[in-house]
Amino acid sequence: MHPLTLMAAGVYGETLAEPERRALRLVVPWKYAIQGIKSIAKISFVQRQPVTSWQLAWPAAYGFYSNVNPRVDHPTHTQAQERRIGEFLHRETLMFNGYSEQVASMYSGMDLRRF
Image (cartoon, rainbow, N blue to C red; front, side):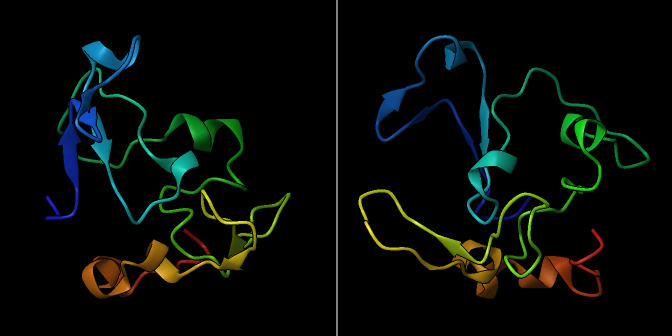
């Protein structure tokens, strides 16, 4: 329900390529690419937070809110620096992917090292 979150049927003025064409995508710009939702097949409203496939695969590496805090490293690599497309040098990864002003309030009171 956040204003920066978009349901997309295309990107950059183009419709999604096969096989994604038949699905919607949820674009959440403050989450890093690996944690972004690839496609939506079904929407369900539930009482409890579901366990994700990433959490099932490697719970220590992928919490539900993972990849919003670059100060918490993935077990195999650092998230403190990134290299953006088209740039050669690495730069400091910004908290919430640079959207702190817009989304930090959604995470207030949470232990982002734990979750």
